[in-house]
Structure formats: C-alpha cells, structure tokens
Image (cartoon, rainbow, N blue to C red; front, side, top):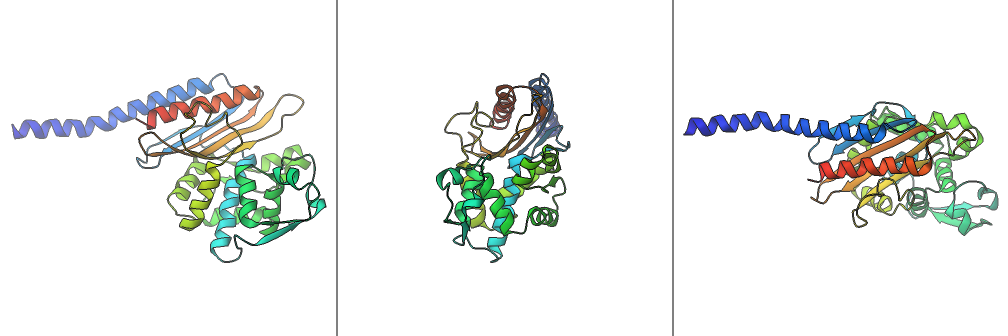
Length: 297
C-alpha cells in the first residue's frame, strides 16, 4: 500500500508541471489568435507575481514606449525622494510659457496662465494618473533629463527599456518617438521588482501603486473587459496617428489583483498598427481578460 501511494505521489509530481505547461500553451495560443488579425506588432509579457509563472508572445521585441515611460520616470523621481535629493512637498513654479499648447495636460487646462506652484507629489499624480505631458517634462527637467532615468534603469539592471526623449522632443519630430522603446518582458520585470519593494522604499512604492490605481487614461484597455471592481494599477502609452493611419504605440502595463487574491503583472504593446483605436484597445482588453481567466483560477 505504501509503495502504491509513493508511486501515485511521484506520478502526480511529474504530471502537474506537464499539465500546467499544457494549460499555459492554451493561453499562449489564445493570445496568438487574439493578436493574429492585428495589422502591426503586438508584444505581450505576463508574470504571476506569486506563482512566478511567466508567458511571453513577442516579449523580446523592441516596441515604442510613449507615455508608459512615465512609470520608470516616476520610479526615478521616487528614488531621488528616498535619497533626500527631492522632497514630496517640494514646490516647482510654473510660468505661463511652461503651459504649452497642443499637448495633453490637465495641469495646463486647470492653470492655463501658469503662475502656480505644484508639489513633486502632485506632479507625480498628474504625470501617472492623468498622463500629463507638461508635468512629465517638468519632472524630467528637475532631474536633469531622460539620461537620469536611463542611467537609473541601467543601475537596476534593466537594459531593455530606453528613455531618451521628452514629451516635447517626441512632439517635435515623428521619428524621435522611436528612440523611447522597451521590451515587454523587461517592463514586466520592472513591475515585479516594483511590487516587491525592490526598487524604492515601501512608502514610495505604496504612493506610486496608489496613483497607478487612480489612472484614468485607457479605460478600454487592460480594464476594458474586467469587472469594474477589479483593482488595476497601470500606466498607458498612446502615440499620435499619422495621415497614413499608422499608430506607433497603443500600450498598457500594470498589476492586476486577481479574484483569488494573487497578482498578475502584464505588459501589452500594440506597435506600428494601422487598425483603428477600438481594434487596438480591444485587443489589449481581450488579452487581459484571457490572462485574468487563466491566472485567476
């Protein structure tokens, strides 16, 4: 009898990984079917933060970052806060000339004439939760530009994320947006390390996680097919669309709290697509739903 139980136990030990791999293969195939009709490149990277299971579809491709760059920028700013170089309540003065037109900025919409002092904490909120481009570039200016972000990513061992252009730079030249890129697998690694308090202090992690939960952009992307009550701490990225109908970036990355209480890091990038916005966003939503259904069991 003992030999029988031992034999069954051994069989189960060997079969469970095979079963899980087969299930993961089903999810991979499902994602491939979702992305197949897209006219462009779709990069997907998933990680169960407790199980450590990973899945990647084109996860090693260099894809256009756009405002997803505001996540590593925020981490860099928070690192400087933790280091005492900056303070949450430190104020930055905005003049009227800072409130440039023709860019997404709820901050400018609220204070079109400038002459206002805004704290570092509030600027982070504008930049992350509302993807404010003016707040982003002011924070970049405060930390001596994109190179500071790039250098910090390299210090962390993150080599698959490139931040080289400001929002104003990208707006000035179509080609410059391609200088900011990332590999989806590297973004998922960054999300994982952030969630584990491996990058900034616990208080800074909690602050950034909160403002990512409050993100108002891209409601039809990662959150599009998920229950409204499901927590999604995320950051979107959206490029302009040129006259030929080409959209270099429709992105969303973040951490989803699953119904089973576990967490999923997910990065989805739709790059150089000529599909309409609804199709691009719908693709991200379908991938997120498939991933949640799989990892949330």
